[in-house]
Amino acid sequence: MNFHEISNIDIIYRQLNDTVFPYPKDKTICQLFEAQVEKTPDATAVIFGEEVLTYRELNRKAGQLAYALHQNGVEKNGIIGLMMERSLEMIIGLYGILKYGAAYLPISPDYPEKRMEYILSDSKPGCLIGQSKTIDKIIGFHSKCINLNDEYIYELPEYSYADYARPNDLMYVIYTSGSTGNPKGVMVEHHSVVNRLNWMQRRYPVTHDDTIMQKTPFVFDVSVWELFWWSITGAKLSILKPGFEKFPQGIIEEVERSKITTLHFVPSMFNSFLNYIGSEDYTAKLLSLRQIFCSGEALTPAHVKKFNTLLGQKNGTRLTNLYGPTEATVDVTYYDCPGSGEIIKVPIGKPIDNTAMYILGESGLMPPGEKGELCIAGVGLARGYLNQPKLSDERFVDSPVCRGARIYRTGDYARLLPNGNIEYLGRMDNQVKIRGLRIELGEIEARLCEHEAVSQCVVVLKDVESINPVLTAYLLTADSSLTDKKMKMFLRNFLPDYMVPNHYIIMDSFPKTMNGKVDRNALALLKKSKE
Amino acid sequence: MEHNSIAEKINKYVLDSVNIDRIDFDMDIFEEGLVSSLFAIELMTFLEKNFEIKITTNDLDMNNYKCINSITEFVCKKKAGDLG
Image (tube, rainbow over all chains, first blue to last red; front, side, top):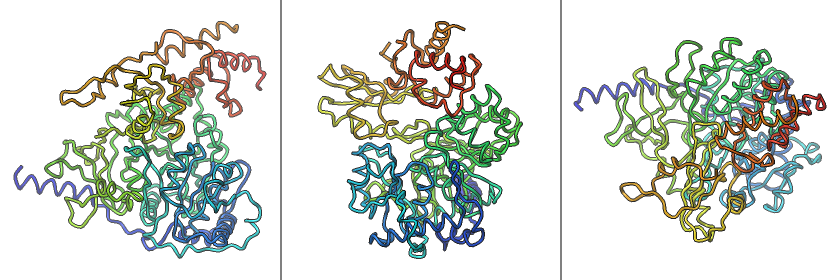
């Protein structure tokens, strides 16, 4: 490459990454919420079934929880765990923790005990908050537990400690699958979320006329924009009943009832949803929908075409593809899908405000068309992994492009298209996604190998493109009596259901690649042996 | 449509979807890992279209869909109007 070409590449990336835009970086999400409460105290804030809270009411209840935390002597600026189903209490819990100036740690009520134990021993929260449905699951784990269904809380004085938190303090810690056997806690700061939401509001503004649906389980970071965007803009939040996120009927009913305008889908669920509404023409019930955001896995041209026919052209709904890892605060690129015409590719698009995207190869920045590792710089970068300085240093590294800056190495392959959009090209490692849920195959394998009879194992995801992608475990063992049932029971002690393989196949040996490693691709192509 | 032909139609649909030859009518297709939760939606789409029923939020109990027999029972009840 000559000098001329190199400087051309520089110019291309400079244009792509020309994203500097002012945002309220001296504020926390909680301060922005409290400012909104001042502006519209009596506006509807949150809807859950027949229950409704105004901005003033939510602020008061959250303030009462903050006072309860103070009464309990919980450390300010620390981490507070929250185990909740979707409910009004979940929202009160989240905002109460922020009003206390602390960071929230979401814990799924579905986690096996051992996973929860690990997360709690790793993050050492100052207190655990639950509701009547979940309180029994947390009460043995901490000396300080608060049940948000206890009525005494709502008789306490209300208080805000929001100003104790600074913009570069932690807002949340979200655990995601880790390749060495345990999940890892990603630490995200307030100002990163402020920038992410400020960008979304600029680009896709919501007002008091809008209602956002909250359907993503709060242990996944997509939930962050659902949970906080509305509250700093005067819009409303409608919380979908637990379990209903899996069924189009539940989503359609809630869209119609609460006049939902803004909704998120993981593409695989989006596809099933579109198939469902197309079969009986439910589009008339979805007239209020203005904008749909997809993220979590690859959105395909087939999805976009189906959407355009069923919702885009009939109802005027718009579709946006978002991309981003938890380590860079929810999403870092966006692409507004065309509403008509032939669609050949659905790229992940261009960087959001104050964010830079680089495609790096061994020789540095890759020119358009050439594949490399997608790397992210900017204000959305997480602080790192909790208690894992070594892993943090591996993934968050000094930028080879811009001195003094940090970049996050996503482990995703990508390339730059001639029109300036970025195209996602798959994973570099053994991370997979099932219905948008991120899974390190290494985490499952490490657990399997802890079984006394298993000497070696490889887990692969089969039928990736189908609606039934299946995790299959291949085992080397001397114990031929190992059954699917036994192995599933063993793994369910450690792993959430979506990470437990469906099938277990005992092998005499593993196929090997030329350089002697286990050939995962060959295993992925093996026929199911069950029939 | 009588019970047996409904069961046969559902059986054929499930077999085609998971690409196997034979299935026990009592086998829990979700628990056994044959299908994912997304399949439940595809299945509901199929049932609504082929048996002229409407699946409402009151019908979202996964026990209705766990095996060929329970799906058949559910469809028969819906057609008879027992579930409103």
